[in-house]
Image 1: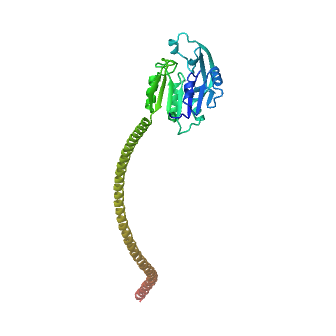
Image 2: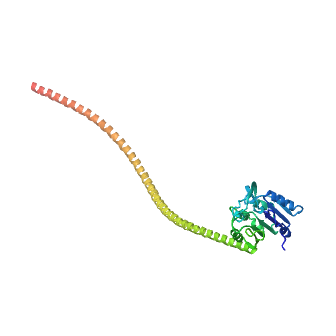
Image 3: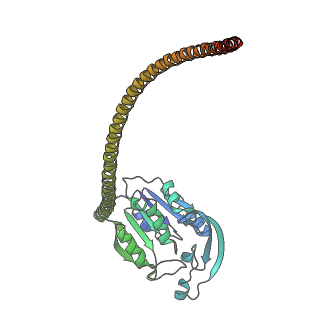
Length: 337
């Protein structure tokens, strides 16, 4: 028989299974109970058994303040009202409600420091809180630390917010646990479901998960490829447009360079022509200055000539006057004779 390292019984109650637990000879037997009177009775019962540890704790899927409901049936206590159980036991009465601080099941399991390569067994007797606690262990990566898993749960929901055993068993099967036995010896309405972790099923689930991940990755890669192809085509189109723009700009650049060369040649020609015109202008200016100088000289000569002519005209006029005077004198002389 495989040696069990740690056997954990959550919601042990009066623990009618104690002898069966001890018969398995676990290295550690941990009994957890929220009801203070039952926890105290358990501690007294196992006194002297070094391998047995009794913890007075309320266990929930997450830590926090909870209400524990005590009933006149010792095994009926729960963090949830026994709504469905009253239909089976009309005489069921709630004796007391206790406000407690619950410990999260994940934190509790971590505190036990279970050996990874050892065989461990978990018994869950948490009415109405079975599935939330199992789900919390799964979410925390702790569920598969246990090779054996036992769960007390009714065929139908017996507590508020509880699930029927079938729904939880289906979920556990999906997580790689096989149902080995349904023990109805203590309570046929709320039997003990015994499951064993199936390594092959776990491997299959792991492979299936990997396949799904591969398919998801493939789908993502396909989408990425399509997006990259579209981006590549868009970039190719943009590159072609840019190439056309570059070619157009190069053509425009060449035309501008040609125009620039033509303008530069025209500019040089105009500069050469302007230089020739400047030389011609300078020559004309020089000739003009000479002409102006000649004109000035001619004007001066003309003025001098005019002055001389005036003097000559005056002399001539005087001479003519004298001649006339002489003529008059001669005429008078002739007449006087």
